[in-house]
Image (tube, rainbow, N blue to C red; front, side):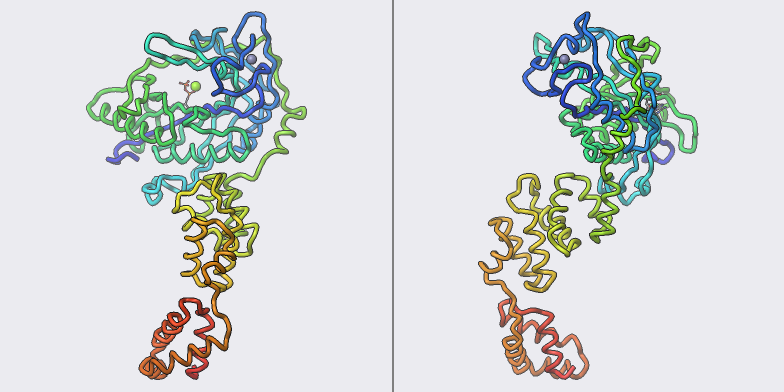
Length: 486
Ligand code: ADP
Ligand code: ZN
Ligand code: MG
């Protein structure tokens, strides 16, 4: 619901996602956008007359896999269509896409409450794990990329013909925070399946945002505006906040909205009219006569099903159930696949799996490490957790070992030796120190015997000091209680 409660936003996303494959969608060129321009091209992806497309099985399989991960219905027979338009980024004047028979239909993405921006997690809009339904997922070829210089423009055809998945949501999203959470969850699922790196900043995930407003309580949708040029997940959120406020201002002044496409300018923090919206029939879609229908029910679906991975939501449940981490910790650990992998390696090396999660999430993360390149091996956190949990060192000493570990990454066992931190667990030595404590603190002893149980803390403190922090607190407690005739 909007800030003033009178208006509600309705949002639907069209997400374009580059599929990670060895070669392009309809030719054998490397799928390597980003290399020096026009180095991965051939007659097919340049759109030269007389060339013929051959579909890429890996791209089709990965799209079907995405469909399985998102609970879609997979079309037994899918078709490719031509979407006709004129633009320099597509010299054959049509893009091969899918219209009537996309590979996947239906399905949904579950929102992870903890993926909401922190300031929104507590609010009513962050209702637990809402399901955002999908309309469809289809596969198409990407177009070339234009670059505009001062007096010239250039086109890089390395991107032309690379496989692109379009994921279209129902208009189920209601707030910028939900759109943000949706993209975060979707990206994690795409990572898990190895379908795409889905990095918005690198253009691997591009998102058109459709948004309208309506009076709260109204069931009909309002006039929608499509926003383009969104380059980051947080940019999507900013653009939506701005555009929703703009639309509300227009209707509150008694004006009416026009269906149009607007361009988000991230620097200006505003949207500008690009064009009024074209209709689907403008594209004159028709089945591509060069491509046969794709039968997915003859092995392709089976192959895709075999590669369905553990999904982020399943991994969260497993970490909570088997490793004893909290829901929030599970969410953080699955939000970043490198961090998640780092934690899994550490956890595999210890019984104390929840303790190791605390070290990694509270201590390690606050040093802003890069888990991909840090010289601190995950196994070191397993050792550290073991040392503290089994009482070989106390938690204050654990912090010292941690600090040393971050500057001189050697095994915590070595650090304990190097810093001389091993706890004194020799009962004889501890008993002698306890005797000293009792002799030196008659007042506390009297108080304790009179029933002030807290008075024992002064004695414990004495022993800790005496042992330079190396005494085992549990053992001191036991010995003192015994001596004081508990
Ligand atoms: P178009 O034909 O203009 O592309 P679609 O019906 O294909 O429109 O919808 C495109 C996207 O816009 C979908 O994600 C859909 O959920 C969303 N959408 C449709 N109508 C509205 C609306 N009134 N407000 C917000 N989003 C909408
Ligand atoms: Zn090619
Ligand atoms: Mg559409």
